[in-house]
Image (spheres, rainbow, N blue to C red):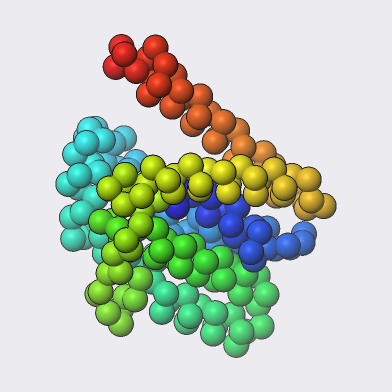
Length: 195
């Protein structure tokens, strides 16, 4: 799933109330943070083209280990045990949202699947569906994910949520709106012919 959809899913499934939004937001973002750092390094610092970044560099063993370490379900379970042991509701919400992110990714990643069971196992579950890959129903799942995120964000804005949650929901709506405009202009409209 795309990161904004993970945030919306986390806020809906895990985080309700004034104190919940910050740890849920952090937990929803953490599994994707290594990918953002990777992309900033590859594109921003090394100036590599996107085609090389996503077809070659992304799949290098060291990078894969870096990504997978932040998507480890055993680490999530350990974090939940620690949260319970020390009696921290915020840490519990954080790890619940990390876990939700990981489980959702487990279901919608094929060729780019994570090793969600590190360090206990290096096995990857290659889902038959992908949230982005057209060869694995990405043309169906991508619009459904966008619809989920937009509807979820809209409903969060209408609920009696803390102001930061409504701002996050509004930002998600803006992000998906901008992506739609970009797609229409560059992939469907006159910009598509020029590109």
